Length: 262
Image (tube, rainbow, N blue to C red; front, side, top):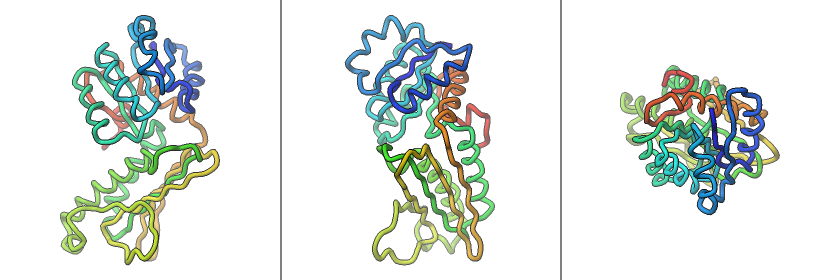
């Protein structure tokens, strides 16, 4: 399988280059700096994109829509690990799934994707009597907050809790849907029952820690994933690349790749 790494000079790009060397069936046929896609793509068109089976994108939010459009025009699959896109950028990227298979995930670690499943099941079982909080920590260089993984965890919790609110007259007094709060400061008042708190911590060289807290009266359940190396993400992305080249056009995530329940 021939791949192009878009964002090859970044931390994840370097991890992908290092990990791909361990796969006898994967060849890197192109490396693109995440900020130079508009400037020097022409030099890669003939030599790389035509020989590539898939592009793996760990770049910047503004560059992903461009590379996804190029992949669609050449009918090449793409794996997207870049996070921090706004709504318009996401809609533009998803539009290309009509023409090519796309795997897009906030986290390609197998452990984190198992965490997603566990968090959903725990939220269902524990029910609305438990308050929901998310804490994520990353290195000092991370540019977006909350992390993409924290946003996915929030979406999972919100989906479960909104269903619980719809069935509970007690919870409906706080509104018809769950509200999110990024940190707390000042006189915030009592915590609403339908709130999800999200807290971002930055410092050092932390690769990525995520904890979901289910806080009840007299007890607390915490589910945590800690990444000590970017290799976990890189190997997951390469696994997704091997999987996506055999798929029909469509929009997939890492749970599709792993065959996990949603």
